[in-house]
Length: 451
Image (cartoon, rainbow, N blue to C red; front, side):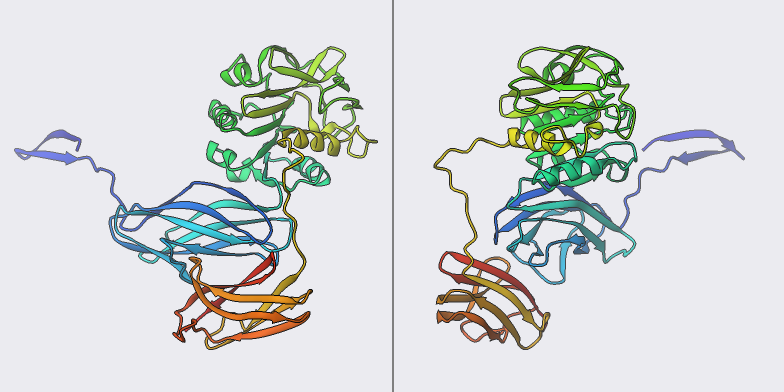
């Protein structure tokens, strides 16, 4: 405690005590462990968030997924210590922390879903926090698109190119969501980062450290930034040891770009970047050393390099990706640059590697009513006759009951569940899952029991 004497008043010493930091009665904070997950069809993704009670009083925090954009056959649940209450909540003593597990059950769509986690204090309803935004990729490589164009709308060029190349991407708008830290980057298989018409001076030393940590963890980085090098002012650890730049010439201009012969990305490419959405005059000429290799060049020198070392890969362009022709003939277009880059990032698969396929033997349709209090009817479809098992499970994975276990003919069928387990005991309120298995194929659905 800091004290200061201010003087005497009527013979008495006046003591002023400087106020110290006062903790609020109610407060909590989220710490995100992972922002993205990859799963196959009909699997469950798990994402983890730490929640800490930072107030001086015990509190109950209500939890919910918000801004949910999930495909129609996907659903999510929130679990704490193996329990998945609905509605979800957690009780924390002052200073206590615990892990919140977010489960996302994916269906038959090869797709991406996004959502955020929101908490609200019961002790003080005005205290709320939001964590995320999270992304789940089903039968897709997880790709983060860092929209770092200083508030512009040019990220759509790269997003569309990736989609045309067969890759879905989750867009992180730095003007809205802030700088992406190492945890966010490291949650993704590949990061595509564009500054478009931004001057790149806002990419800080902390951002470079996040990129380096991501690459050290085996990440794949595509960085397209016309002003990145010229905004550095001099060599940094990132430019020297990760991009392997030995120097560069600022703002050298030039519009005719050619791909380096034999390069996995640039080979056979040739295009003009002089007629895109903005001037390419700020493009830099780079000098580089091994293990960097030339990917693109102009008359004055190198404009793009690729780096493959240890477990990571980097593609760096010093000209604007957005100025590559959108509809140019193959391979001279944005989609082909994105496809070749992502393909180069992909691990090489051997002839014996198995790629799982969805067996179209059955399909879960829906249950109604949902939520329900006494009973619900589960509808399902069998495309090929044979043994069918339809079971109920708690969110923890604990078996509850078998509703169907035997031969079923092709067609659409239904069965009723009365909210009891196989022993006839009433189950408590909460989220339950039904799982339909036919041969090697299975599908799942979610329902809510409210007593």
